Amino acid sequence: MCKKTVRRLLMTALVWMIGKWAFAQPHILSHRGFYTNPWVDENSLDALREAQRLHKTMGLEACEFDVHLTSDGELVVRHDNHIKGNLSCQGSTLAEIRAHTLPQGAKIPTLREWFQQAKEMPQLKQALELKPHASPQKETECIEKVLALAREMGMMDQLCFLSFSLHACKEFVRLAPGCYVILNSTNVFEPVTPAKAKEMGFSAISYNINVFMNNVKWIDEANALGLDTYLWMCEAPYLIDWATAYDVTWITTNYADKMLPYAQALAKDRKRVKKLRKCKF
Image (cartoon, rainbow, N blue to C red; front, side, top):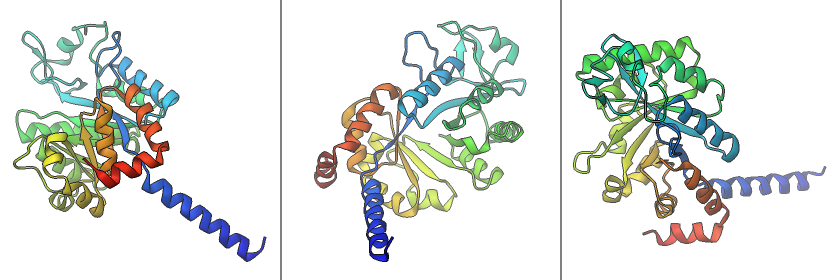
C-alpha cells in the first residue's frame, strides 16, 4: 500500500473519530438498578438482573444503587433509610432488616450479595451511592467497610462512588486515591463549582436540571477541566435533547428502557444534533 493511500486512510479514520466524538450522546445511568417493571422491587437483586438484561439487549452502560450501614455494622442496599414502622436501615440490625419482605417479594440485599450478582456482568458499571448517615464518623466507617469489601471481591474496577454528602465524597477520594467519585447535589444557591470539584479530587458533578439550568456555563467548564457531568432525573425525551445540546456526559433515569432507544436514535440523526447544539434551549 502506497504512502498516499495510507495517509488518506488515516485521515478518513481521524475524521470519523472526530465526528463520532462530536456527536457523542449522553451515556445512560439506570437508577436503583432497573426497577420500573411492576414485578421488580427497586434496589433488589431482581432490579440488578433487569439492569444486566438491558446491558445485554440494549447496551445499558451503568446502573446505580444505594448503600447503608446497619446498627450492627453490616452493609445493605436500599434507597430510603426508613423501611417500615420502627424498622430502618441505619437503626436496625441486619437480622431485623432481612426479616422484612419488599412489596414484590424480594428481600433487602446485602452489599456482598449485590457484588456477587454484579460480578456476573463486569462490563456493566456499578455506581454505588453512599446515603448520608447520622455523623461524619459513621459515614467514614461505612466507606471503610465498602472499600474493604470491594477490594476483597475484586470490584474496584467496576465501581464508581457518589453521595450527597460532601464529607463522604472527600473520604472516598482520601481512602481510595484514583477512584471515580461523583458529587451529587440539588442545591441551586450553594452548589460546588467545577473548579472546586476538581480541586477536591472528584471525577464528576451530578446535579438536577434546576441547578444546571441556573449554571449552564458549568457544563463547558467541567468538560474543559476533564470532569464528567450527570443530569438527573431524565424521565422525558426533551431532557435528553437538552443534555445533548449542552454536552452533558451522563443522564440518570428510572426509565432506561425508554431513554436508551431515544438517545441511540438521536445519535444517528446528525442534522438534528447539529441543530440542537446550534440553537440550544
